[in-house]
Length: 255
Image (cartoon, rainbow, N blue to C red; front, side, top):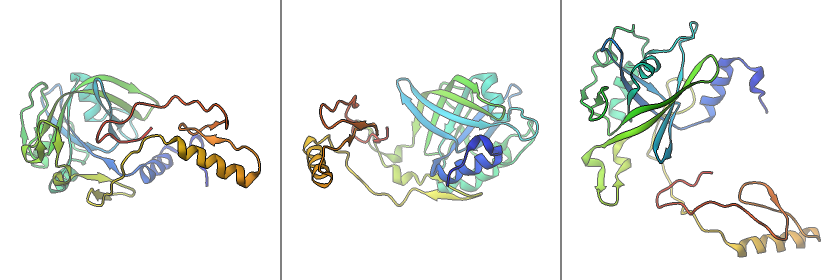
């Protein structure tokens, strides 16, 4: 079944995205407003998007009905600073309490009884119980459409709990011990990162390509086109591909 997204309502498009783009990491974002009130709110439209400079991205939806910025977006625009804290399972209840639509003069830090500690480079505090926190400076806030702001931030300082660092020199982390949670389909549904598997990323094998050609030729009785690495069709003679650098150890293999 296909969905023409332009023909759907915003709510329908939202349901399709959050029901399929899963699991999603959670950014528990702390900011400070111009009045000094500390705000904390979780967002699952979040990910890391680069390393030179190190960048993260947040998708911040605007208030339903009014189309105004919610506290996080308003504070980021006003101050240019924010902290992204990752969420461990033990913090799930406090994180959920910080989801409420509290008045702007009410701090979710107080409402949800969230422990904080001072950051190094930015004014918003870290969540003390978070296994990882990223101090961020605003790079750009993009209003794309009437309902959302895309925030790109540069990570200035990363805090990782000492108990989760297995080898400081090699930057090997005991990520499973962080007990991080993420969002999945449906309202109120979360996932634990405990069911994993491993696949090594291999190098390009020209012998495999030759074997595929021979098999296709034998089946069809004529030379067959072979898909190149980028998903297009390459001719059987003179295949050329742009390729990409071999991944670094531990780097995901997405394209």
